[in-house]
Image 1 (cartoon, one colour):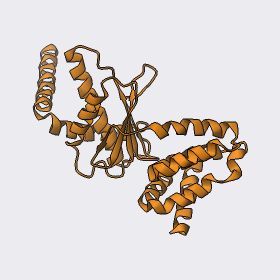
Image 2 (image 1 turned 120 degrees about the horizontal axis):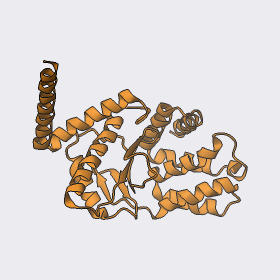
Image 3 (image 1 turned 180 degrees about the horizontal axis):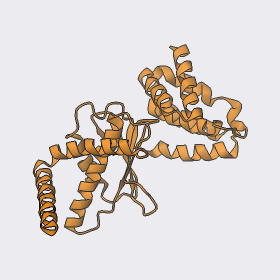
Image 4 (image 1 turned 180 degrees about the vertical axis):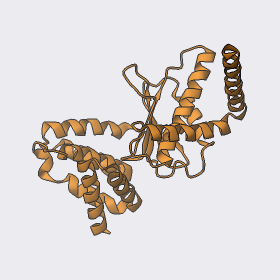
Length: 263
């Protein structure tokens, strides 16, 4: 088991160093499946003196990845390593990574979906209880295995500088949702909710379809949109049917107008 964990850690770091998403994802998932058998290996890697030196190349990313993995495997061991590393002579760049990762110590999921997928809602998201409830509701419309292997869902506050409403991280099978403000009128809030729901299903679609470049390849975006539309038809059958009829009627009217102008 120890040898297998060593090989998986090596595979994970190789995937990170080469930016090969499938290698990183597969190693990450296998390490999570190995569970406690991986913890000792991760802690051994974290005990290395390499973190005292200036990072070269991809080594700069290794510390964060290993700490993130340990947090998923064993939160108690993660807290112990954060405390231990904070007392060591880390290079300033690694110390910055440690500082960022230490924020996870106080992190607690607001809710879990499918009994095992933690949902973390940022403290500056307004009305987190509403966000939690709608995510639980939306997840009920997904196929039973749609969220399989998703490690976590993060909800952050939408900001003007963000150029996305949602992201799917294939590396760690995580979904990020940028949550809009809720202090608007009823109609606007309803429209925003529909858009957010579609975005959630869209990002799940990237996961289900195994897209390596979610949001960057036009064909994959079309596929994720089609997946989201399918789930929306299930969650809002009347609305989606009405919208479909409206689109058909609009096309028919445009065609008639075009024929008239042609005559």
